[in-house]
Amino acid sequence: MGTYTLPDLPYDYAALEPAITGQILELHHAKHHAAYVKGANDTLEQLAEARDKDRITPASLVGLEKTFAFNLSGHVLHSIFWQNLSPDGGDRPDGALADAVDEHFGGFEQFKKQLTVATASVQGSGWGVLAWEPLGKRLIVEQVYDHHGNVGQGATPLLVFDAWEHAYYLQYKNVRPDYVTKLWDLVDWEDVAARYTAAAGA
Image (tube, rainbow, N blue to C red; front, side, top):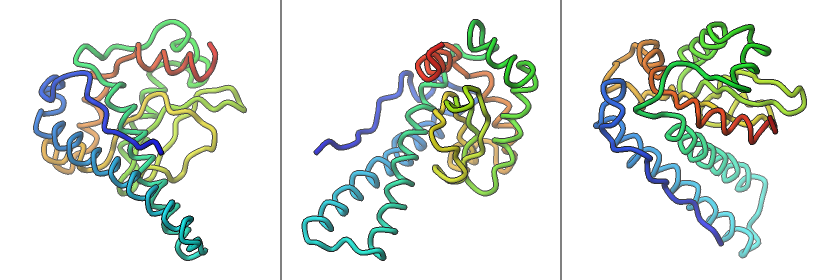
């Protein structure tokens, strides 16, 4: 049975400074993301054991399914997050992605404000997400609570901003909006555009 693995970062831990310190990035990747990978693998083993021993009950399954969704979604979103960022990032998208942003949000600045506010105002822990919604064939912004709540089913994440305290608190304290503002300087629009093309067939 396949297992999940922690991906290597495409840059050094210090590469995103000063927006994100090397200390935070190392803790975030090597500890927090690694914990979600372990949690997903451990839960898969527990589900397999429950099936093998015929112990699948409503009480046990609900907890295991929720734990698996939490950890797997944490792994997926972090894996996208690392690729969405680059020490050479920033500016704004061009080409088909820029056209879609203009069409679905009325312009880049309107989109930027919506995703910024969505990320900064997530209640508790969560994410701000730019996603492709296939039924409406449009870009949407979502607030994701924890890693997996409040998500439009079938929407594909393209650009994700981590708003969990472990992503910024050592550097920005409780001023989440300052951290979100700095993330825009790191966005790798080539990565986001490639995800858009794959999801939308653009």
